[in-house]
Length: 251
Image (tube, rainbow, N blue to C red; front, side, top):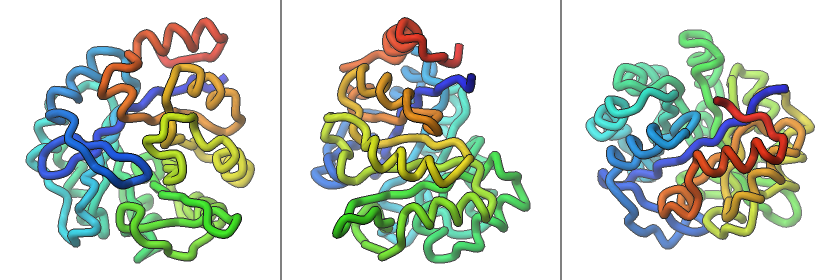
C-alpha cells in the first residue's frame, strides 16, 4: 500500500502567509518562516510554498522569503508562483526547493512541463491545477483563480502526465477555504484518467475529511492551510487518528 501524505500549504503574499475562501477574501495569518518550522516539527510530510500573486503581477517569485523557509525545514519543499521558464525552475531549486509547481506558466506554454522534466526529472515537476465547475464541467482557471481558460480539467490532467509531470496538485476553487470537505467528485473523476500521484487541495475542515479523502483510489496526499495554520488540527494528532482508521501514513 502506498503511504498517504499530509501537506500544509503556505500561500505567501508580500512576505506573509495569507488565506482566503474560494480564492477571495484574503486575510493575514502568520510569518512563513515561523510557520514552516512549526510544520517541520509537528509531523508534516512535505510543505508547499506558493507566491500567490506572482503570476497576476507578472513578476518572478520572491526568493528571499523562500530561502529563509527552506533553511528551517528538513522535509521536501514544493514551490510555485510565477514559474514560466526552465530558468525559473533553476532559480527556485537553487533556493532550496525540491520540487517546482507550475500552473499558469504551463497554460501559456504547455511545452514547459516536458522541457523541465527532461532537464530535472519527472519527480521535480508538479502540475498545479485550479479547477472550478462551469456549466456542469470541470474547467481550469489561471491567474490565481481569476481567469477561466476554457480548458477541460480532466483533459489537462491527462496532458500534464503525458508531458512529464510527476505529480498533480488539484485545487478545487469551489471548496477552497469552505471547510466542508474535499471535492471528492472532482478528485475521483480526475483520478480515473491519470496514474501519477494526486495531491488534493481545498475544503479540509475536520479530521474525517482526510479519512474520506484517503479512501478514494488514486489520491496520495491531502493539502490544507487554514485548519493547520489556526491549529484547529495538529498534524501529529491527525496522523494518529488516520492510523487508527487503518490508513497507512508516512512515519
